[in-house]
View (cartoon, rainbow, N blue to C red):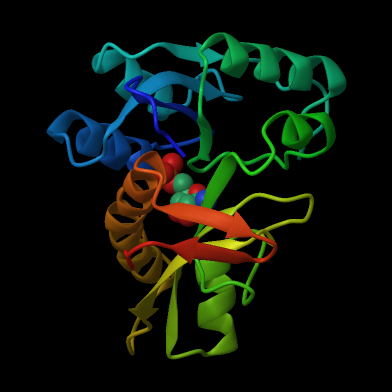
Length: 211
Ligand code: GRF
């Protein structure tokens, strides 16, 4: 994906705590993820993720999402596209961004938006996937990193990691174990993308070497 000498540029979108953002930023700083964080954007003005980004001296912006609850309105979509374009991002990284992206945004960044989901997709798409897994009674759940398409949690899968469900787990303990797996899987997949080691062919992602 990145054959030039220019560093691979990430635009990170999130709404919350930012534990995935921190793992990605630490991996960039340590040199294990050969990329630069070009911009961090949130739809929540008070998101701790923005504070974590500012502490690291990274450009961090709140961009108002508009009046819808689960998506961006048209003006907001245009503003998000403009911010990411101005930052010259190669890849848009969703890290707990709680709004569905579609239409114009996905056309602008076709095959250049990735997400991390806290289950083994296609099981348990949507909200609180760890709770869905616990309620269902599965013995293993996990983490999925995937490209984003027009559906919800349906895009081509890049990588998955299993996480056991243990007797006595609560939603909080299972979520914490899943988040621990996220913090290693996401930077590793982003590093492979930054190195141009993965390409997408329809629903398949083709890796030069497994993650
Ligand atoms: C993660 O659990 C991720 O799977 C989901 O949103 C959560 C974000 O957490 N997409 P954080 O803000 O990265 O701590």
